[in-house]
Length: 81
Image 1 (cartoon, rainbow, N blue to C red):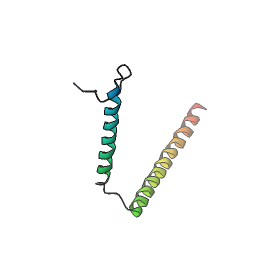
Image 2: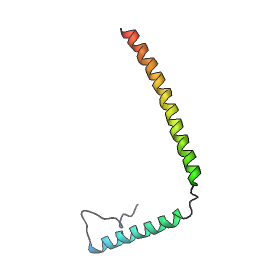
Image 3: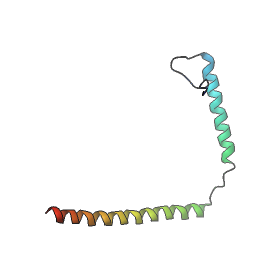
């Protein structure tokens, strides 16, 4: 069974619960900062290249879907009219 004792509750607001919740938040933030120091961050050039790839692939995908949307819309209009 999961222990939710460290979380704030609307029905049971004991005075010490806020301090415990606050300490859990402080510990979480400290651990998060510590973990972020271990991350291998990309260089500025790598980030620019990856961003360009994402934008480029997104544009190609949009053009591909737009092309087929135009074709199917045109065909549907021809069938209906």
